[in-house]
Image 1: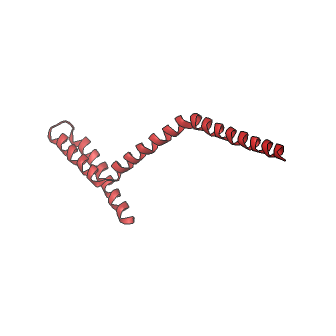
Image 2: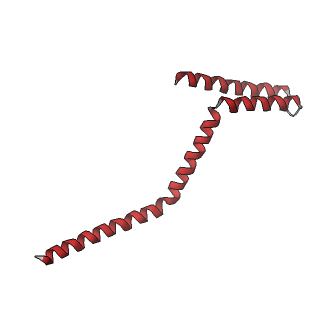
Image 3: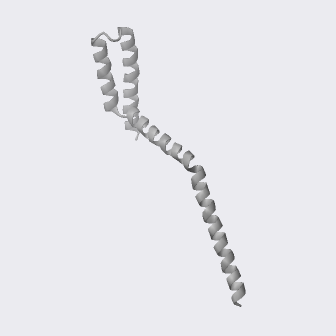
Length: 99
């Protein structure tokens, strides 16, 4: 009676040990992919925050105005970039109202 029990216990131990090896192998193989996914999510979070923050857009508008006043950009470029930033600001405000 103890022989089948031992045999069963040994089989279960081998299965568990083999599954643990597979999980470790999976972790090693997928570590670079998981790292890239983590970095991509963090980058996405930062980009989302910057593009959905009124303060950031307002700061960019002020910097744009300063560049124009210092003659770093011409009026045409200023108008084009200002229009883009004002559209972004308007979209952020619409998105906040819809939440």
